Length: 116
Image (tube, rainbow, N blue to C red; front, side, top):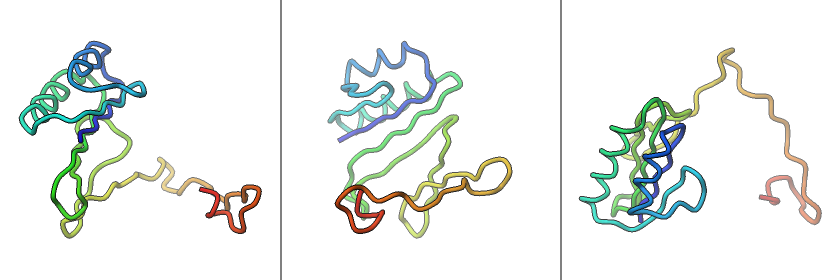
């Protein structure tokens, strides 16, 4: 399984990827291709991304059962910690985390977290 997410890329790149993958949502592509095709799609996306960003996620036999890579301007970045890939989300420019209170409980739920 392969997932590619494109942010702020030229429309032509999205059209090119639809030759190999389905686009269930704008900028999100999914499909099942060989490792060779996966790497070629990555190269094509990186070369044609303009000022945008590309994220690619694919199935593997690794501990997490997937790997991912990012290139270009995205709001997040991949951090590897003891062989596990994590996503780092930067703080806003003022250095303070966004204000978040507890989520309100949905009807019929005992706690706010059960409504997810």
